[in-house]
Length: 295
Image 1: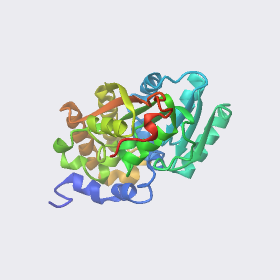
Image 2 (image 1 turned 135 degrees about the vertical axis):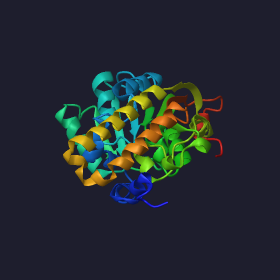
Image 3 (image 1 turned 45 degrees about the vertical axis):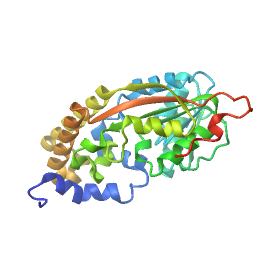
Image 4 (image 1 turned 30 degrees about the vertical axis):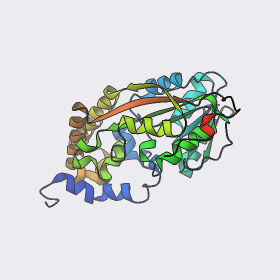
């Protein structure tokens, strides 16, 4: 089928897909900082926004003085919220140097540079000591990691015994996922490489962690998808400047948003918070997370 007869083919082959597969492929934070993407998301970088971030913090047991690692911190929205509202001591790690620089600048401007810091690093090789964190959070990012098992094992390694990891991410029923949501364009919705809920739970267990809470929040994802679809339709009518370079692909983007909405409505795509705890020190004096189960 040609791009002219299939609007999604145009999106997958056009300039937009070039961004997803090119310079931004290795750093989702940089993609989400694009003016066009930021406008579409209306400043909310993940489902549920502030409220679900604070719920994740509650599940992780984050309180004043907690040492928290925010994996794939982007420009620092989550890290700054945890430091500002909960008075935690937060470190954000992100592959993109520009996102790290923005996070540092925002922290300094908010007077939080003493409570939150940002560093470049890879989730598959976290630049932190064993058992150095009370909690680890990873929002809407694990689904994009190339080596998910190694990343989760790294989260477990830096976590102190008794500390918690909370993953907030898109979930999918892979066998039922529409073809349009398996390609490059679906990366912007964190769908193409997402796992079933059980897949994330397995990763945490295989890293030696004990699951203690799972919550489904598909309604938050549905609200975000609805907002993106509405803003795409508005952009087609109003000629929003930041989206003008992609005007020829707006119809395809709207169709992709609608495919996503249907998949959410059908329960094929969802969103969840998954909390797991590193076991306390065993009788032998070692936490079981120090020797994670084989993948």
